[in-house]
Image 1 (cartoon, rainbow, N blue to C red):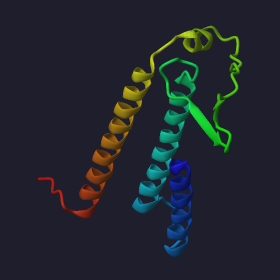
Image 2 (image 1 turned 180 degrees about the vertical axis):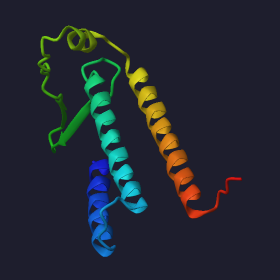
Image 3 (image 1 turned 180 degrees about the horizontal axis):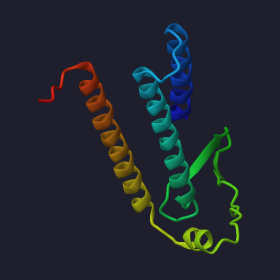
Amino acid sequence: MTALTALLVLATLFTQVSASLPKTSYFKMVDIWLLFCIMLIFFIIIFHTIIDLQVDYNAPNSQSWVKQTSSSAGSSLVKVIPASGSIPVPPIPFVDKFFKMKFNLKFYILLSRYTMFLIFLVFNVAYWGTLAKDSGLVYYY
């Protein structure tokens, strides 16, 4: 939920910044930076969705969401479990084989961490390198 709110705030910030700067036929560096931030949060939402699909809420040692109702006569617990449903998979051999592969939750969490770090690192090296080269901070002999 926080990522969606941050995405909405960044989209609003992007429109306000774009409206306050002069109109040009090319992308400005601030446009590239804000679009990257929006793209990064979108990837975070995608990873959260993938990880959430892998959580087994029916496992005995997983923490289930419970709603506790208490009355003067006593208390009772009502377990809330999400509806189980299957995702329809198209009959493409590679896609079918990929969706049938089972990875553990730790794999997806580590994959998301390393992927987000690599995307952030590569973008920042390219962005700040281009900015430094174009600003005259880096000289070529």
